Length: 350
Image 1 (tube, rainbow, N blue to C red):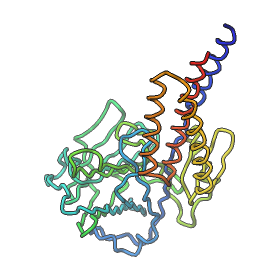
Image 2 (tube, rainbow, N blue to C red; image 1 turned 180 degrees about the vertical axis):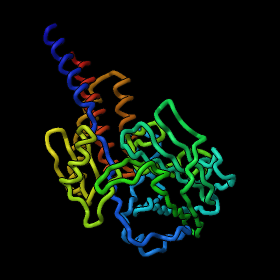
Image 3 (tube, rainbow, N blue to C red; image 1 turned 90 degrees about the vertical axis):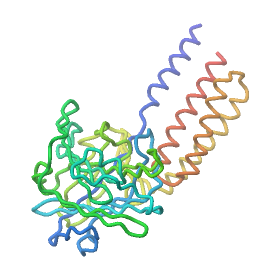
Image 4 (cartoon, rainbow, N blue to C red; image 1 turned 90 degrees about the horizontal axis):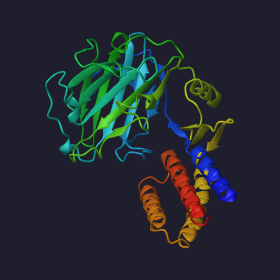
């Protein structure tokens, strides 16, 4: 009996400690510009070539989200006057864009093909300034002071945006004066932000995506980091890790420079993505095969059902998104489920 109690205690301890899953983060750098762009919805100004490109987008409002199927690119620049934004929304069904809302500051602007932009200058997940722009240039804004205080009547009075619709994409070009964002950041200052892309052509949210995994109007702690640099060079891994470690508890991971910068709780390290993917895939495949063999030896239908569900989820994830950090993190999450199945089998044998 004592041995059985000890085994159950060890299993319970493992389940609790295994639940600390690595959080995937987003970190973007904004460089200054001496020649601001003309806000005309074209993104053809030379300065945009100096902006860093954010092109990692994730399925919206999903746990362990895979990469989004819709391709999107975002660029940001800044100067003494404010922040400049450029977004290219690639769209194979351009004729099906939803563009019904034309009334300025309409609260339902977000129901069209549009961009929602959240800026949190304090980077604390409490409040934000929200700006919405649909594909025909209709603009709407709101402010959140905290979870209990949303000011839909608030209106920023200086920002401007223009859009253009092309054969296979639609474009946003916008300018936000610092007064609309709350303050001008100092060099090296870190904000958080989120870009949601809404593409409701199929009448559901399957076409929705976001710039930071798990980020949305509710999960403000999952906004991506935005660092205002001096433009003299890209921050190195140690500098970025130092910024993140002040704000996020480990374990965390950041896809950068074709690899993974991570803090596993014991140290900060960088691993080339191909090496990471190969190692994680091999380990998962071996565990999947061992688990399948073990499941075949027990008669509990619930365990078999859980394994089949995990197997189906794995096959779906691999088919849709088999080469990104999101995929690796989903492997890690499913690896935890396989370990859970393993311990359920162990309990059956007690």
